Length: 288
Image (cartoon, rainbow, N blue to C red):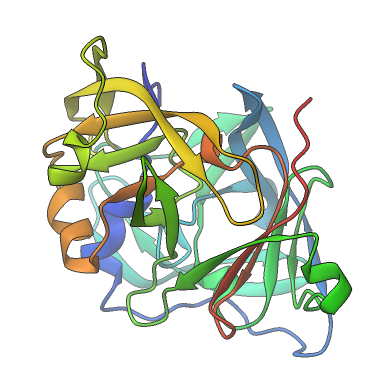
């Protein structure tokens, strides 16, 4: 899909359908670190397309990485039911993962490097143990070791919660205010909605359109915001602002979030999820 200014991907669209379901990601050996290759393209210095290799129905395929999706799933067959509890099995990291299926007119199979993207790898991959997206290393990790005291001092650590909602909610200081945002790898730029969108909005912000995963376009104001992360100097990041955007606004309001934290706010770095410790840990940023 193409988004003129920022991206709002499929993850949030799935919440109402999948939140009542159950994650079907295989547990794996609890003490072993699982490494999964991550293939990306780049835009604005951060990840754009993000896929992991799988085997599905006897052929090489991809799952697209999207932490805005509470659960991993396969794209359902057109014309079939919207949700199927057990739609198929993929081979991922040497294990079999049985996934549900989800269908919507606006999403479906696309090709990446000649292979089909058959579904999404969602947040359930990262929930049950410390895990990481390591963009510089080009891989995902499940069962990553927690940093020791000396290592923690070199990390940026954000408060993280998500078990109760199956979403990654973090706290950041943006435009001088502490805000709760949902971290979504499908969001290219940070998005503020509702009352939060009016804070520090510049008079010269351009009005552009974004397209959500259901195919609807929405007007937003494209500007900037001042972000301050713990232990890091302040920086200016792209920020999209809108009073309301379709299904996103009621979903985020229910979560107690003011918007989405996009990848351009974090840069090209290692990102560790540790829901048990309530932390999102950011490694040293590398911009290339």
